Length: 107
Image (cartoon, rainbow, N blue to C red; front, top):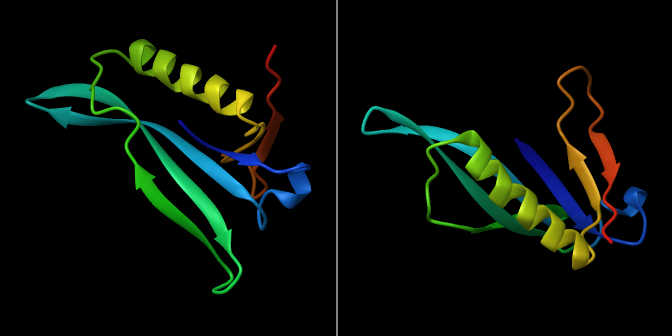
């Protein structure tokens, strides 16, 4: 799973303005077992080099033995970021070139 959440006033401003948080839920093999982990990268648009910059920040060094456990942390972090204003979510679209957009609402 992968998506980027942006903290901007509109989704159109998201790609080249403001800051974003990229969340990843991935797996790897450790000691012959499949384990899952969640990573988070903070990013921002640097107008001086006209490039989006990603700096790594590991959300948790914990590995999970089940996808469901890792997904629970992923969803908790996604909700926390939305509460901080990162409410415009974009994820890869496996069926076309345009990303999938979701407006995250939190109560």
